[in-house]
Amino acid sequence: MTALGALIRRDIRIAMRVGGGALIGVLFFLTVVVLMPFALGPDLALLARLGPAILWIGALLASLLTLDRLFVADQDDGSLDLILMSRTPLELACAAKALAHWIAAGVPLIIATPVLGLLLNLDGAATLAVALTLLAGTPALTFTGMIGAALAVTLQRGGLLLAVLVLPLSIPVLIFGVAASNAAIDGELAFGTPFSILCALSLASLVIGPFAAAASLRHGLD
Image (cartoon, rainbow, N blue to C red; front, side):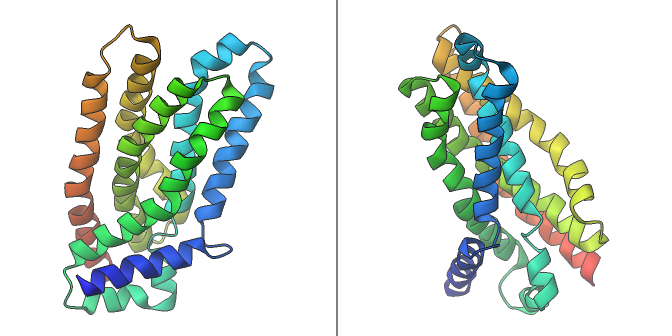
């Protein structure tokens, strides 16, 4: 547990540095949300109706933008070889790295959501509903994306392969995240059903993601 805690703290410190990736994700998220009102025009009702989908798409793309740093930096400086050779189970090390990535890159997106919701004409309750769904769903984006990040490192294909692998796996999270947000805002559908599925997707990715990423790293870097 001491080694895992040290790994989490190390990855968070690296991500928070200038050029570490966390700030890039937030700036990209901000850029997507700010540009949408210019693209859609001054129709405030349309912005409010599309607001949850815009916030979710921005969070998805911002998360994808920073995933390539999950293992690449460790491979470049040799840290990944030390992690593979350590006595700490590789699955736990992968889970720790994904948790650190979510704290550094995912949590700032959730914190920024209430502010950015104002640009999309969302009221306080609607913005908090979207933030709640992002809190439940962004772990699934990180732990699922970790599988693609591990494959991208082992196959030396970089960001293009990562996008091809991760985007199809992220579609269910996007669907139920937007559905839960709209259910909380409109009140026409039950909020609990899509939100429960969203939480289940995060829990499933938390279990499957570290094992799949560890298996990919073992077979690809041996």
